[in-house]
Amino acid sequence: MNYVLDCSFCAALFLPHEKSNMVKDLFKKIADNEVFVPVQFWEEMTELLLAALKRGRLKHADVLEINRLLSMYHFSTETSFGDDYTGHILDMAGLYGLGSLEASYLELAVRKKANLGTLNGKLKSACHKAGVETLL
Image: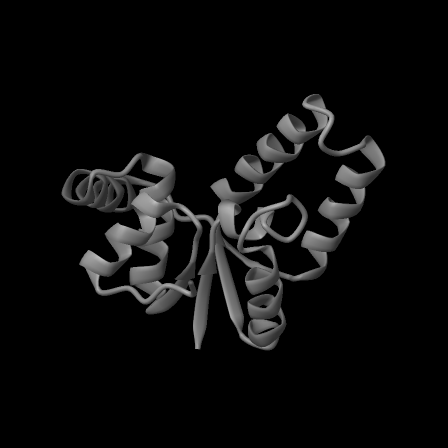
């Protein structure tokens, strides 16, 4: 089985969230499967970690350790771009009322025939409409 994970899902591993324990359990279950992220994931995750650092929710050493641990998962990073890719993102964003970042996760899940891990309600709703299974 293939999986696509977004930042909201991965952030629940290290930021307090009501679904953190469920996310941790799912990470253990999918550890031996192919996990894809769009290239935007890394910038989005860096921005999330920086925001947590600025708000005092994490210390600098915590951010470095989280980044190291995320790198250990060996996510397959998709670097799609160009006319066709942009067209697919625009189509999905328009069809499901998503922003480009959210649409990039959905596009990747559709293309890889993958289940998607997200805690983003809007993206989760779009997945169900598009026939993409979600992890939670």
